[in-house]
View 1 (cartoon, one colour):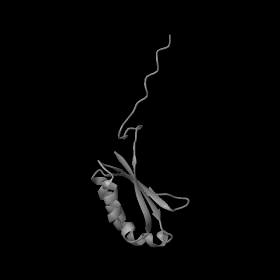
View 2 (cartoon, rainbow, N blue to C red):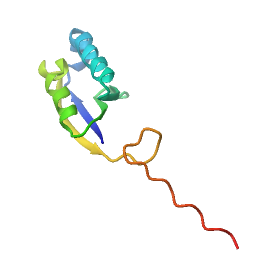
View 3 (cartoon, rainbow, N blue to C red):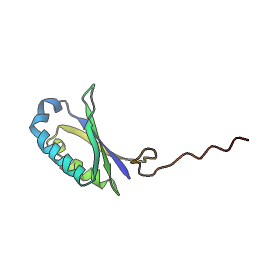
View 4 (cartoon, rainbow, N blue to C red):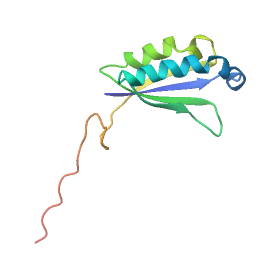
Amino acid sequence: MHYLLFYEFGEDYLPRRAEFRNAHLEMAWKASERGELVLGGALTNPVDGAVLLFKGDSPEVAEKFAKADPYVTNGIVKRWHVREWTTVAGEDSAMPIRPNPAPPIR
């Protein structure tokens, strides 16, 4: 299954981000190497949050990441939550569903 981790940044995110960015990125790349984190990054215009896509058997993989993330533990992420995402289209979808073939023309 896929799980989306949503971050909502605090007002001091941009001025404080550099202090924790290397540790955050190190953690993210290790999660990627383990096959847990598929993609992740900040939302822009405005920079007010981030979305990280995880793959796993339960939401715990994303929850554990958030609870240990230096951005969260140091308070520059003010809120986070995880949502299960039922992916059905695309090469990496968790539950691919193909369209039914068109009936033959007579």
